[in-house]
Each structure stands twice: as structure tokens, then as C-alpha cells.
Image (cartoon, rainbow, N blue to C red; front, side, top):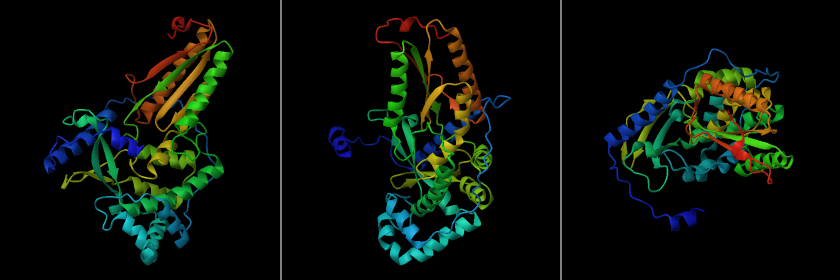
Length: 365
């Protein structure tokens, strides 16, 4: 696909000239976007989700061996930060020579529950969202974070131990296809499409709602995430201390060409471009499944996109009322967790039996 893309899409030169001032403009724009998005959210008085306490506990990391370190480094793509002292490819080549000092850094972090400050700085490089967009408009750019390669190695090793704990105890959401092995947009599509076909074959209409969230990864609240890891997932002790250190005092700067902005703190969000970020976001969303199950609504998620759907029996007005009540609880839970529900981009589709032309007459209230 990269080859086809390079042949069909002619690369466009950026209209914005690289300078420290332009970098600072991007930095302030990205930070203010997150702040303004959170400011628009009004938290409800009550939590509609159902808390399921966990008996399992994950409170201490297992020390890493040289073989585990080499395996983790071998599976990580050679991409890092412009601030890396050596290129990631070169780092991978010389790992046999520097393995012991690197291992000492990794195990020291895991045993103490402290993430080095230099691991928590991301260099952001703005990337145009789509070819052809106005390159002078800052809103048309997506912030791509570049993290130190050694920090990714540490994250990968933590990820493996955390994932093993989650899989063994069955904690992850079953109907979440994002960032999971053997799951993809394809598996999400097949499941939702199959359920809709079965309902339509039974003579029912089906209403499908495609929820959209604004900058979901960036507005995650660190305090809520730590609480969720502790009370919902079962993380404690040194492991919880490590994740608290991982999230706090993170900083970013924007780099375009040879120009770079000043550094600024990022008190919200999970780091995009990181290895742990997607998994932490999935755990952040865990209680949303309990809200949908409480109402008996079918759903499937892919990362921050959620599809909810419900068969509608003919002339059954109670189903719609039930669905609207569920939507109300979803919006309340999202607001409580500083996730901005974008009503303008949320879509509704109605499917009907193949021999029916009454889909347009279904009253959605």
C-alpha cells in the first residue's frame, strides 16, 4: 500500500515555513484544543456504570532477563525520537554490546516504580490529515508523537506483563477489536454485519448508531485512569506506582525541520504513538460495556469508535425508548470521564428486511 500510495499521491510541499514561532503556534494550538474540548464537558451527578470488583491483583513486575530484552527490542519498529542519542536501527544492532547497562535501567525502573523523566518527553511532528487540505490551517494537522526508542523498549516489556495478566483473568472487553491480536476492523465489521443480517432475516428492522468522540485519546483524565487501573483492573503496589509515574509530568514539544518549539506539560491524555497508550485507553473504556449490557444493547468497539445496535420489532415503541435511555446513560458516562461525545459526527442508520420498504417510516423519536 505504501508503494501504491507513493505512485498515486504526489507529495505536497508544506506551505508553512519551519521556524520556532510556527512550532510554538502548533504547540499552543494542540494544547488549547485539548483544554477547550475538556472545558465543554459538563459532568453529571451520578455514574450510570456498574463497578465489578476484581479479586485478581497485579502489584509487582517480574525482573526482565537479557533474552526477554532482546526479544522485545527485536519486535519493536525502529522508530524513535529526534532526540535519541543513537538511531534506533543502530541501537538494535549494538544491543548485544550494551545489553547489560540497558537491562539495569529497565529493571531499576520496574523495581522502583519510577519512569525516567527523559522517557516522558514526546517530540510532536504535525502531519496533514488528508492530501489537498489547506496547509495554512493548523486544525488540518494531526499531532504525531515521537517517543524515545528506549522508552518504547520499557513500555513493550511492561505491556507484555500487563497483557499476560489481563488475558489470564479475562479483564479486557470482549467486544473491543482495537489494538488486539487477531482482531481488526474486519472482525468488528463481520460481527456487526452478521448480527444485523440475522435480525433482518427474522423480519425486524435494526437501528445502528455510530458514536463519535472528539480527541478521545487526548482528553483522558489521569486521575480517573489511575483509579480505574486500581479498582476495575486490579493493579496495585509497585505496578500502580509505575503507571502513576508514567502518566505524570509528561511534556511535549513541536519540531518541524530543524526548528523546535519550547517544551510544555501535558496533564491529560494517553501518549499517542506509544505502545501502552492504546491498551490504557481500552482499560479506560471498560465501564462503558457495563452501561450497554445493563440496557441489553448490542455493541462493538474499535479503539474510540463504538457501534451500538438494536433490533426493532414492528410497532414496538418501547424499544426506541429503551435505546434513547441507553444513549442518555452513555452520554452521561462519557462526560463523567471527560470524553467528548460529538453529536455532529454521530450517525444513525436503519436496516430493514429485504422485502420491506418501510425503513424510512420507522419512528426514531
